Length: 407
Image (cartoon, rainbow, N blue to C red):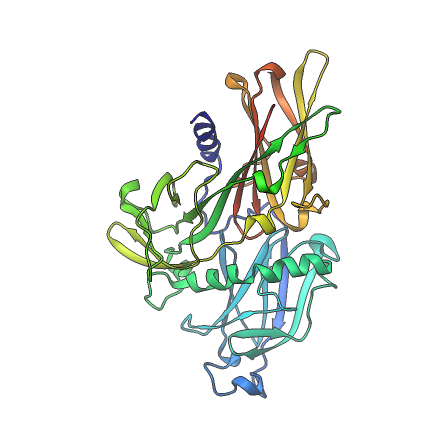
């Protein structure tokens, strides 16, 4: 119970319902392209299906935590998205009707990482065409403007279903108006919790549990739009999947902010061993009004990036800093910048507990060092330490609560 309470306490610093999580302090990457107004705007296989790409008047740039709409003028657009995130692009007609989503190099997201010219990189998609509901760029930025390796590209391809589901949530109240334009957007993602092993201590390396000994707790996270606010926590109810609903979904965490709310839903079990939710269509009831949301998740046993801490102490046996390494389940080292957006460390040491690093939903952009090195601001006796919590958000908006024991 103590672990759950502490995790809940840190979660209070992780709340933001702003439609634009990426603050003004975050560098914005320009993504531009051209919509041809004549000629073959669809592939041969899909010429007779749906609207034409030439009908596109707006570009909706989004991830699970932010939405922003850009106007297409004179057949061209110049959208922007925060560096260090992964975003999807949907193309809308003048009535906000859905036309299609960008698919570049087999990905339906653009990971804005490993950028050729850093924060000055411009992603030029060049001329776009439509194949079904896939908007295909003449210029594939992967490998050039976006320097991911083959394994990293494959990683993002495998999680494509997550964004396919997310793209369906642009009109959860089914009124034909893109929700973000009316401040009624609901943003759905996952949260995972697990005990990963024993933290490192000075020159003693950390020990990661064998995957067979790790259990994971799963939950669904729903963040609000500005004009949807439940009258109480009890007035925000999640049910589903609609074709075969669970009878054991409960809300275990809820908080409000000036512009919305944040709620977490789970199924019965220990904090780090609650069962997963099936992919599908769910109903979110707020003040008795029903909203349809689509949910998909990733398998953390495949896609989890371990954030592995090592404690450093001084001659007085006080904790002075925490350094981080990032690896996959198989132990191979990864570049966290390509997978992780923000990191926070919680030192759990009784009354001396301290949170280090940027809040996951603050208005501050993390410095490079804040993914690798965290320095304490007060004296913390090593003898009081019982646990370290590493909390991070991936580029897709999912949250990971990775707990490390001091034993």
